Length: 533
Image (cartoon, rainbow, N blue to C red; front, side, top):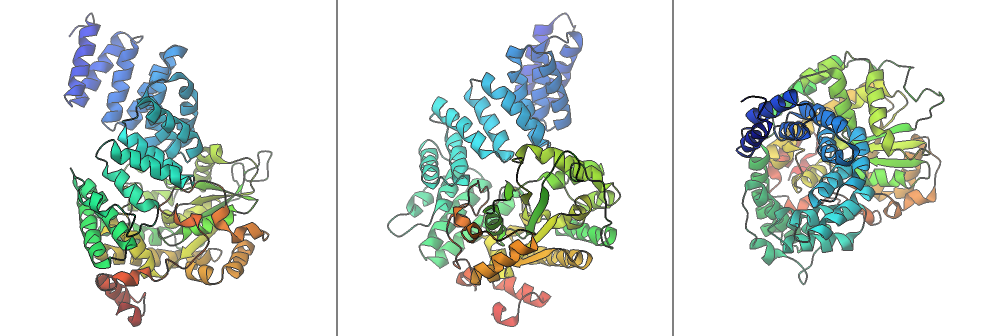
């Protein structure tokens, strides 16, 4: 093909892309840009095809070049997919800037949907909501858009709006994800539930099968039909494991061993800290809440967020992504033994600088303390301390049976693959417990918070918690359900209610089915014999 036939070259590239021959399509589009650098459709097809192929760095660079060459009136064509690419690369700050630039230039529902997803994943649901509302206004039959809008409403505590959006989603097309979201939205009763409807929903994939079975478990559990609920939970967990892939316990054990080998002494104090060293550019003190998922981390976050000097930034993947980038590990996993060993040798100031840059857009500019609540950041306790020596590290603990059953009963997105198998649950808990024991031996400033103690004695425990964090007592902290702010976690419904003991010992409803888990935990010494009966 000669460079004198640009239109034919482009048509062939588009055809190859439609046929799924992405590498060949990218090569042809690249040839077109080499022959005619001003040909914007060449840059667009090359960049978006690279994005589809998972070549994220290439896609980001190509789409950036296309945006640079495009006139102002055509920049949004490149900004939207580039923002999506930057999100996938974990560069949220840049993605947000592009989304904000592009939003006034777009008119298509698909573009509004993409930018809503970018802003939502960047923990900016208030900015994402109007974009999702625009999507359903432009295309009222877009089932997935209604589901996305419902999730955003739920994060913001707009529960009635969320339920209405989920209903629109299931009414406009087969949408097992929306059925599951609606089941989770509140507690159902014998007079008001969707059990019969759920049993009639067709499923086209193992993931859809998992979603419907988890939804049936949730509603049947609400109705007190525990035997039927357990049956659907087992089916859902099996389907989820098939859909998402099993957990690699051996790799997780290697990662644990790497942490224990590479970090054996108390973290060295680093005085240089970008923006945190008392210089002209003030920064907040960092507070990280860690633990198991479903251990009460969201409740602790809400208690602290009610304080006038504290701002919750959300569940951020930022620290782990910063560690991966600074370590220069080339493995395909966010965290593995190679990443750990490399990270142990880097200057923690680099991690701190990248984390600060990637989270700056979230800070309100006035709160003295910001919260990063990502439970599995417990992996990074020593690196967090190295990067931010004055960081507050809160470790939330819960009865292991309640915490692990809490994880087992939920379908997570693509995280926590250990949560779909009773044996994997026990092995993961052993890894987690051993690592936290290792961290606490190195860092006596880690603050432990017991969920059960917090529920039994809220005022005294909240006063102790605030004091440990260097915060004065404020009565608002006793009413975390009234705190403002989004809750983008599976606890978004529960934490809108006053502190209660409804979740204590819930696992005992399914004691017989959970016996393999309790017996394994008993054998490992984590629960007494009485709990394993």
